[in-house]
Image (cartoon, rainbow, N blue to C red; front, side, top):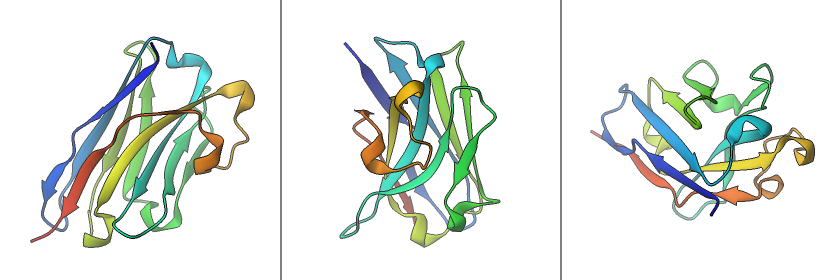
Length: 126
């Protein structure tokens, strides 16, 4: 059974940091592109960051560039999103998603991903 499970969300003050993890089971992540998406209340899903299976090609939403870092450890079948200098506008449910590399268009688009976790809530507030 293909499964993605996110962890690491929580409440953090502005300027703080969190590290999200995405553990895959039932399949091997090493041939998949992986993405982190988020949905704030009343808003559409948006692509935050994506990384291709070759580790070399990454995408970041403009508003998180320089603050967030996506990474993957294929040996642990896990992906990560390090989030620094968090802002209240980063508050959202964060989802991990995966798409076979051969089918991945490359634009970190919500509709391009086939496998999804259930999400983890990140709240940035003082």
